[in-house]
Length: 373
Ligand SMILES: *Cc1c(COP(=O)(O)O)cnc(C)c1O
Image (cartoon, rainbow, N blue to C red):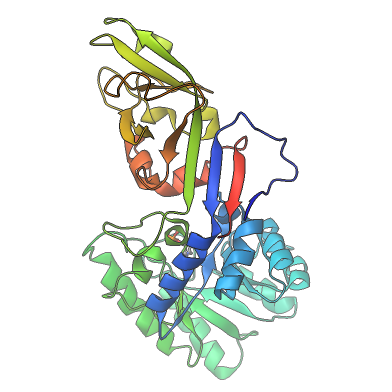
């Protein structure tokens, strides 16, 4: 079954089509859940489920078996609560001043990472929350000294609340053999002994899929659920997102002509150029364009890879199809911009960024199609 999920979006029969494969999302969660055994697997659905649509992703993940959902913002927690009334919802960015009662009303568990947060949560009545310990990323979380103090208060019963989870975040799990990863794991093992019987969580996608890294009790993958790779070979997860843009025109361009803004790239021979109905306003990074100095990204037309030609415009992108037989590409055809051939990480690499940024920048004016079979 396919549905266009954005009730508020105007129909966009002429726009590029973003297809989100919820069956692949579910399969990816199950794969990660198997890897997490004997521990269990959560789902990180912050930033609108990495741009894929939190209101559609959460029910699919719940059906697959996910019970713990991590978000960054309270508004995201509201979406999860509406979509999965029984879920455990964890607020990664912690407790901001004055928000304890709003969290409690939604039964959201803050990930507490400083004494002021702990004190405010405790003063407001406590309740389940996670404790975030910084083991070397220097972003959020209690220092190791503060974690030791919190641990002794916990053991004496004076912490003021019972941590339902202790967690840390790995900074370098996506880099093979980075020395910080085992150091963080060792520090976290030590922290864990201070909180007897409290479940522990360390692993993002990269760590979740790395057998050599201790995954503790609860994995917290995001990107791997959505078909992105957090490290090199990752055959186990399936692409979730595909993006197809219609061809508006196919034009013959003589040799020696510039194409697009700035005439940044010249035809070296008589060329055939297809113009696609997609641009940087749709989240295709302008940095992935092509120029005399540097090759850009590719798309797939008529089953063949075709390189972008010249700069990416706001609403249009030019593609070189000279190597395809005449007539192989025509007005109305759909080019694969992302999909089984062109992965999010490939497009990202051409723009000097990561798959995470491609997904969370996906455009707002696509036809969004959610596949459930
Ligand atoms: C975003 C985030 C994750 C998920 O990271 P991926 O690399 O997408 O798997 C896990 N834990 C924390 C604390 C995060 O901020």
